[in-house]
Amino acid sequence: MANDFGAEKLDVDTRFLLANERTLLAWVRTSIAIEAGGVALMQIHKHHSYIGMAILLLGALAVLVGYHRYLAADKAIRTHKLPSAGTGPALQVTAVVIIAVVLAAAEFTFLK
Image (cartoon, rainbow, N blue to C red; front, side, top):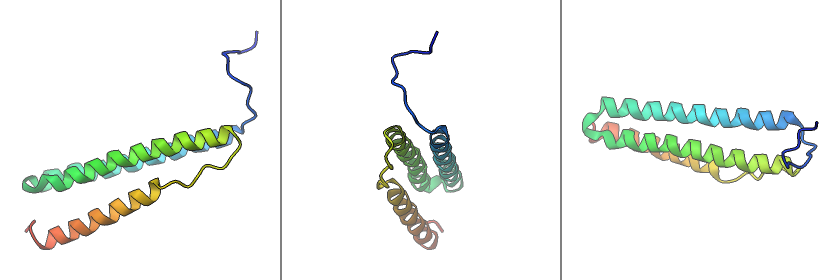
């Protein structure tokens, strides 16, 4: 008896699907690291915990971007197309740079 769950037969290289899953896991690990930094900042600067909260939210945004890219790449792989580059990575890099500048400015001004 064949495995027929109503799915169409696809000729997709499993290596691409597994690589896509590994990429999603990399986004998850990055998100967890960013969120850990946000929690640490909230503990260190209790009176200015909004800075840590912003970084915590950046970590949440990172995992959402990663999941969105995972779904887009999965769809592209299954239709034998290249996934689009998207704006997710540029958005995350921009957010990290902005937060780095804000943290540097905060260190020399109101966090002292």
